[in-house]
Image (tube, rainbow over all chains, first blue to last red; front, top):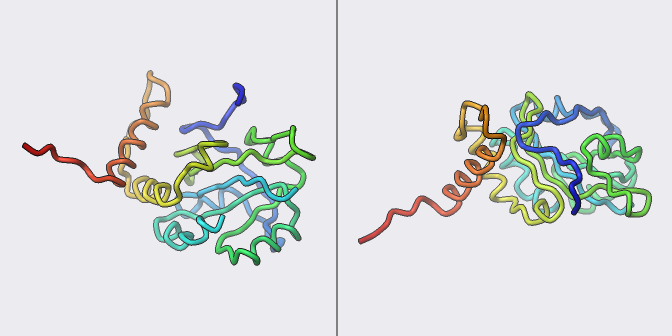
Length: 46
Length: 141
């Protein structure tokens, strides 16, 4: 891996508003609003 | 993904919501969610806007997909844990759950490091995680 910038501990994660697989709108603030959000990025089938 | 689903309820009771994101569209993501009976939402980013915002676009792959990554993010949107690529795939879900418990219970430095950059928090979390996983060893005579 090169020196690609990576979101590090202590930084602010970018807010987003996108749909989930059921069509519901999801925002990071809403997901983490209860305390914490475990956000997993996966490769998918593309 | 199934690993996360197995402990999704435990993450929730530790105060954390699990969500997983890929560039797959809603139809494909929903098929995967049902196939694996996932207990958390699959977020769909076919436009790659979020993947790009997180600097995780692997443009070398067909159409551009996300590098695997895991973040623990608090309600102020501060990153409390991050692992990308090999680190993400090596991140044990049970250890992550212990980390989430530790963060929720405030078992981490209250003050942010001022001069020394960010590594002390990571070192502390790793040490805390290790202590939680393996227990604190008391030397014997």
